Length: 162
Length: 154
Image (cartoon, rainbow over all chains, first blue to last red; front, top):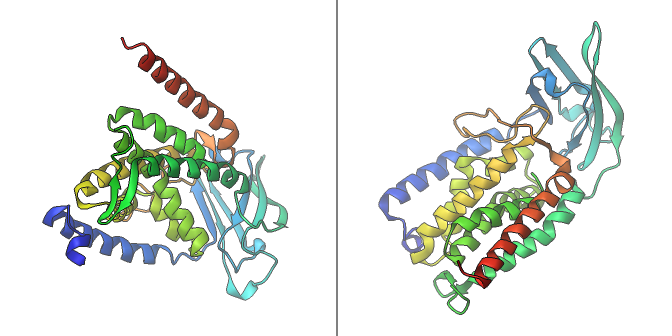
């Protein structure tokens, strides 16, 4: 079973694939331990005057008051900290936190929460999904027009114009 | 992400460089692969964003394409891997063009570096209005030219 699964690539691919999968798996699990809900670093010019919202996606513990903004001449950093002991403060999965970053003379950039918590969305980025689902159906149709499930896995169809 | 419709249009346009129709279908499927994996992790398994975003990295797409190519019969696996990975690469290139307020989008060096890169060309939420009409128009134009060429071979 295992030899069938990894056949078709030869030995170097097997070794490379196994090592890469192991490393990515380890790094992935480490990477996903991050504590901040949302953090952002960059050059202030990207943020000047922009209104934006932050989506508390996959978050069950959050407090909008823990927003911090550090601005230096050439960089800014926004950090929204997750804190178990402040939960719940109305931020649930799919909530949107609205904020506005503006430039104030003498003070530099100021981060202002516009509304602490907007109503949760059942599905974040809803309009993107509404456009994406038909596209997914089209992609699946294009794929299934050329491939079918055979006894050894997916195989190219021979009954369509090739 | 730009919406998948824009990705699909880009995939269809990019696949025009591949002669074999089955190869084109693989390229288009590869173009959808990173979002399929990310949404499966994020929506299906409630994974944190940091976990799911590795699907949008070069190393991540290599793993995804490698795993997905195992679904194909042995004779197709190498080719499937190559085309799925190429399609996915186009996907993350398009995602790199997003504007995420300067915080970066794609970890091109993952897992060796977590530095994110963005080109800042369009706002994340506005791809259906900003990009989709142009993408659909481009696909329509290319398909019409193709149809005309088939009708009147040069």
